[in-house]
Amino acid sequence: MRQEIRFLLGSEPRALRDVDPTMTVLDYLRGVEGLVGTKEGCNEGDCGACTVVRVRLAGGGLRYEAVNACIQFVGTLDGCQLLTVEHLAGDDGALHPVQQAMVDCYASQCGFCTPGFVMSLFALTRNTDRTPENAAIDDALAGNLCRCTGYAPIARAARRMYDLNPRADGITARQAVTVVALRALADRQTVCVGQGERRFYAPATVHALADLLLAHPEATTVTGSTDVGLWVTKQMRRPASVVYVGRVAELARLEESAATIEIGAAVTYTDAAATLARHYPDMGEVIRRLGSVPIRNAGTIGGNVANGSPIGDMPPMLIAAGAILQLRRGGERRTLPVEDFFLAYGKQDRQPGEFVEKISVPVPAPGTRFRAYKISKRFDQDISAVLGAFAVRLEDGAVASARIAYGGMAATPKRARAVEERLTGTPWTEATVRAAMADLPSDFQPLTDWRASADYRMRVAQNLLLRMYIETTDPNAETRLVGNRAFTHA
Image 1 (tube, helix red, strand yellow):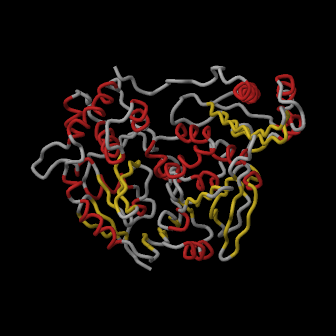
Image 2: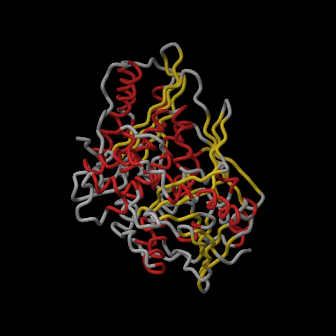
Image 3: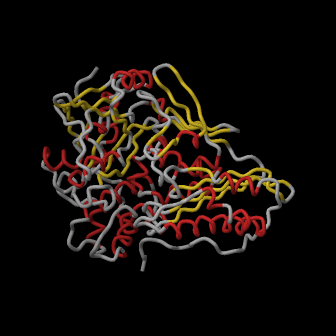
């Protein structure tokens, strides 16, 4: 068991021992390293002022990922390189092409948000080798907020930076050295650091993870900490022990066959999105909207399920798709449908020391129509008021089977059983659908909160079923919001 966290800060090695298990990367940078270019804004992963870039080994090379420093625990940096805005300028002090583009396009005013935008744009240059389309720029910057510029100058800078050869920099020149250094940090040991009785564990194998959770069933398990990070920054909670699963290679596997998509519990939204979207286009679109690029780079589908939130976006879609969970406790494994995992508000069918190992999503059967609709106050990066997911299989114009699930309508994500029964075996017609809509109150009694009233939720949920019918019977109907982007490109 290794008793230090090892990573590169820029090109300099760091080894940390006595670390608070929930110290955030932001607090480490500003309080320990004195690197204050990374800002604290919302402290919950929404505003992007704290954006940094985490660099990991991937396929023999390096993968650059924008992440939110304010909700990432410093222990999650083990085996990685961390880049901040201070690491971009050349050795002679010359601005990085991304920074120069921001200057050229007058894309900074008060400057508070600027380092975060710069780091998001820097990550974009590492993942896109040519000037991206406007929509791709918008997606890359959806997690960065600015009160001053109106965004248009920043979007212009995102195009301008490609004219300045953004990969002709010191970071690129040192990539080969960085690969060697990160390989030297990689091992199969479990990391254990902490202060007093509080500990941060980072196992490297699934067997070590299973043993750790048996020994410490009270521990809080995290991967992206996109939710647990807020426990710390907003609720001031201090978990006694944290078990980080991001180093467990077995849980990061995404495997596709003719029948199923196997998603390890540590597979991020970014890693899973393209595969899921190929089979379930609406699932890919919801993933694009459910968080910013930094959130999707850190957050995992397995974590969203294990968290058990009634307004999580993935569970209703997985339930409608007929997904199966695999749980593990020690050496024992069991499976159950995703809908059976959620027992009550804040309670899941998971024993002490048990964890989600993977999710199996079936490839849609022929004739299946799948739709998913996210209803939220803000189009991008907002919590759902209602999310409806529908999988209807048609044969000869009739409903052979129906799986319909909602989030935001009950204490758990759940199926609309009465609606499913009403539809199954009947013609796929507007009259049938409207009759099924009337059955929805027998499935759900939604609550009123600041996101939506109970009446609004019920009406929306009913109308989403009608929308699904319209989309599957009238391909020319305009039911989708097109061109609603966060930024203007004038």
